[in-house]
Amino acid sequence: MKENWKKKFLFIWVGQFVSLISSSAVNFAIIIWLSIVHGSAEVLAFSAIAAMLPGAIIGPFAGVYIDRWDRKKTMMLADTFVAACTLVMSISFYMGHESLLLIYVMLGLRSVGSAFHMPAMQAAIPMIAPESELLRIAGINQTIQSISSIAGPALGALAISLMSIGNVLLLDIGGAIIAVSSLLLIHIPNPKIAEKARASFAQVWGDLHAGFQEIIHNKGLMWLFLFSTIVTFCIMPIAVLFPLLTLNHFHGGKWEMSIIEMMWGVGMLVGGGLIGIFKPSFSKVLLINCTYILLGFSLGLSGSLSSNAFYIFVGLTIIGGVAAAVYNACFMTVLQEEVRPELMGRVFSLYFSIAIIPTVLGLLGTGWAADAFGVNYLFIALGCVIILIGVFSFFNPSLLRLGKIKKERDANPSEELL
Image (tube, rainbow, N blue to C red; front, side, top):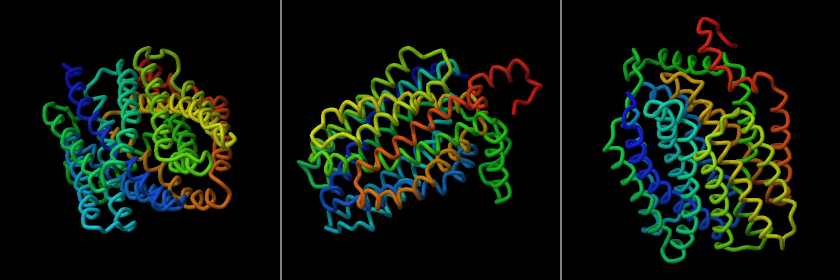
C-alpha cells in the first residue's frame, strides 16, 4: 500500500519547498512593513491574533472533515483558498487601500485555509510512508522549512526593498500554484472509514468526542499536550515580537531583522538535518524535554543581553532554532505513532486549537506588556517559564513512558493502557 513512497514525497517536497519559500518571503515582508510603518508591538500582536484565532476556533471541526474527506483534495483546496486571500490583499494595495482592518480580515481567512491544510498534510504522511521512516521524514520536512526560513527572510527583505508590498504578495500566489500542481501528480491514500463525507451536528460532535477520547485515554499524550500548550503560549508572543527586539533593543534595521530570521532558519536547518540523518533511537520524549530547556535558555538569555551584543543574540537565535526543529520533528512523530490513522486529522486539529487559543488570549496582554515594560523583559520572563516546563517534564512518569506505550500495546493488544 505504501509503494513508491519516496517518489511521492519527492513531488510533495518540491512543491512545498517553493511554496514555503514564497510564503516565508511574503510573511516577513508583511512583518517589515508593519514594523516600519506602525512600529507597535500591539499592531504585531493583533496581526498574529488575526492570523491564528479563526483557524484555532474552526480547527477541531476542520479535523472531523479532514478525516472524512480526501486529504489530497483538502490540501489543494486549502492552498487555493489561501492564495485567493493573498490576491485580495495584493489588489487592495494596488488600489491604495492600505487598511489594517483588511489585512487583519485576510490574515484571518488565510488561517482558516491553514486550519485545513496543515492537519491534512500531517495526517497524510503516515498513509504514504512506513512507520519506521516517520521521524526521518519529520526531520527532512523540518529541514525544508528551515531552508525556507533562511532564504525567505532574505528574499522578503530584498523584495520589499525593490518592490511595493502589493507586488511582493504575488510571490505567495505563485508558490501556491506550484504546490497545488505538485499534488496533482501523486496519489495519497485515505484510511477506510464508514462515515460519509457529510455529517449531522450529532455526528460531528461524536467525531470530536472520539478525538478527545484518543488524547484523554493516553495519559502520556495528555501531559504532552498540556506541556506543549504552555510552551507554545510562551513562544508565540516571543516569535511575534522578535522583530521589535531587533529594532528597539538592539537598534537594528530591516537587514538586521532579516539576519535574525535567517539565523533562526539556520538553527532549524541544523536541527532538522541532524534528525533526518541520524534518526535517534532513544526516547523522543526525552529529546522534547531537553529542547524545552535549551529553547528557554536561548530566549531568556537573549532578553538579558546588552544592546551592543547583537552578534551574541544571533548565536543564541541559532541555538533556539536547533531546539525548535528537534522539538517539532519529535512531537509530530510521537503523534503520528500514537494516534490511529482514522483519527489523526481531528487529533492534529485539536492540538493546534488547544495550543493556539490560549496563546491568542495571551497575545492580547503581551503586546501591551512589551510596549509598557520592554520587549527584552518579556523574553526573560517567558524563557524562564519554558525552562521550568522542561525541568518538570522529567518528573512525569506517564510522559516518560509515552514512547514505550505503543510497543507495549502491540505486545499486549488486549490490555488497554491508560
